[in-house]
Length: 488
Image (cartoon, rainbow, N blue to C red; front, side, top):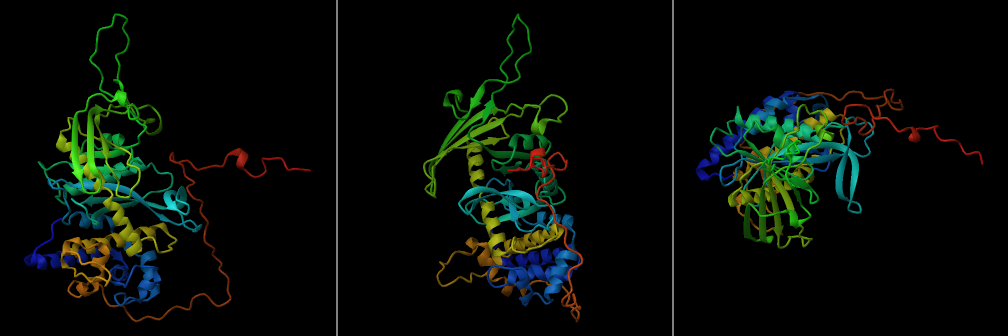
């Protein structure tokens, strides 16, 4: 996304003001409290450490009771807010293509036994840097990526994953809604434009997602594990006097066995600044062999053959100094050219920009700081954070670099979200603030001193619903009373 010139600054201010007005219209209940809460997130000094501290910001003219009341009893028209975010100018690649990234980020709540809808979230790097499953609320984010190295993305959607959910099925539905909004009514994609490229990490079933989104102008690029086995196209049928069914799959393509690779469709060699020499090899028309189990258990009719292109990326070094293992990618397109191969692996590297977005909304905007009990309130807070981050993205050409004495000066188009946020309080004076002034009130009496809580909160188990929709039940040998009591 290019930054506007000096003549276009009034347009940038008007665009940001229009989005704030539309955001206020999306807040259908307790909108004044929610709108001022979003402004407090943007204008408070330093990172957001706790939710109640935002009530002390000058931009939040209501008390802490109104703050929690807005999150717990407020209402947000999320459908309208989704359309408003999608209608804004979005970053595109050099060829004018929209590149979307999908990833899951958890809001960890390990000790919140009274919070419903918690699932076990996969985390890495906590404690002894091991893989752990910690209770929390996992959210699936969809963001548009920019060209080149940057810490900015454009968040388009966020969806909380319920316990036992089929992640691939929800991702397919989420991507379908986002792409349909990009086509109409947003008009971000029209007939004749390059197809939208969706980049996924190894936790997603890229061929399955590509199969169910084949009716949309979209290409799927996903990372595969290094121990996968693909199949080639069906060989030409040869008459066999013994008869029998013709083969449905060709020979094996084993990622770990170079003997099975054969000749490449395309090979590119690129010199990069961070990774040294990057070599990409592509093999055309390879597909996974599907079976009638797991995700395809209820599929009607014969299983499809989902062909695509396999790209193997090998780099000379890693910026972190780690082991430079090759990366295997699957692209839903076929007949790949060297330009297609370079676009695939370069777009996959840009996928990691969404990690900077997660870091910004967590460490700076405090997305996972509140200790909310209701999952619906967590959804409202999530969309307020998305709206705040979107305002920072729109304020990039208007921001002034208020750098610390130890920080290096950077150009205006290289400011990070945290540095843009430092000057948002000064910029807010020029923007529209539709929130109404609070009415004078008096705090309620509250619970009498010394009285006990007569309505204890309900305790909820974590992830007790299976992917099939059935309730989880403990095995017989885990139940109390099934083992004989020791008598000696």
